[in-house]
Image (cartoon, rainbow, N blue to C red; front, side, top):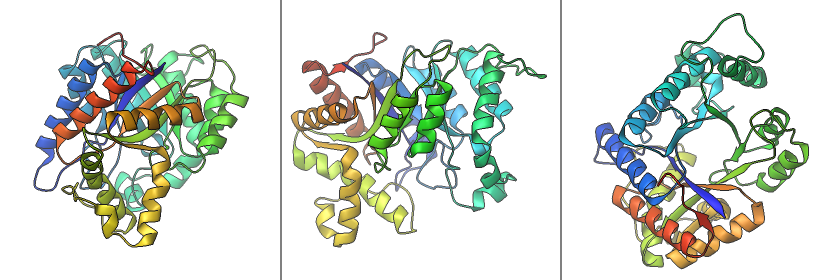
Length: 337
């Protein structure tokens, strides 16, 4: 059986504001917990009007206070944007507030365009090249091994579960060498999925915290009572992705029926390419697609992405997905539910 988790971009809808986006995120996390999802992760993005998770640790603190048992985490923190000490302090604080519930997924991409480096007063190219050393330093700040000349307070001794995130062979290799669990961003970058997972498993070296490889894959999932409704609610994210790739990002737009039919062939082909890691349809259809994807990847966990314009549509999608997979013996409901 496979664990199911939730990835939330904290979408900001057209016609709504950040306060509504954060309220929807809280409701989504509470629903995920009640349904038996194992983790609720927020992704760090910057300078994007339609995504509210830039201050990731702050958002997670509010989510942690509104839930009781579900694991909360970053999927991920883009480490080149920060010093390892800052992240150790932030996630050490979260661990003290919500002990035994905190995950920290680390990514190498900055999460925005070149202007972000100037705004952050950081050379992001140099910071990305330093990523393996910064990951090792961050782990040492949390665990105390090896002992460093400074001590993160909060942070030192925190039981934060470290993950590496990636969409290429680089992250897979680093996760394997460090003996960390690995999450692949197949929901938006599926090209290197199979090669990355094979490399991670073949080169994995056991660590003090992980004895054998552990893989999470991300999928966009839109589940509804009918296939037509599932395609309709999925169209908001499809529109947002087309706008992003066209250089015109914005807030999450309302759904459009038969949206793909309105697109020229190159844009339809782009969305079809992303559909390699997507499940859209009725509960039966979604369960079959997720089961097939897990058989292909051998994933230990699936993290479910997919923003919808109506927050209730996403809650319903999570419920239908979990019910369908659990009924078929595919999904394992979290014991914390």
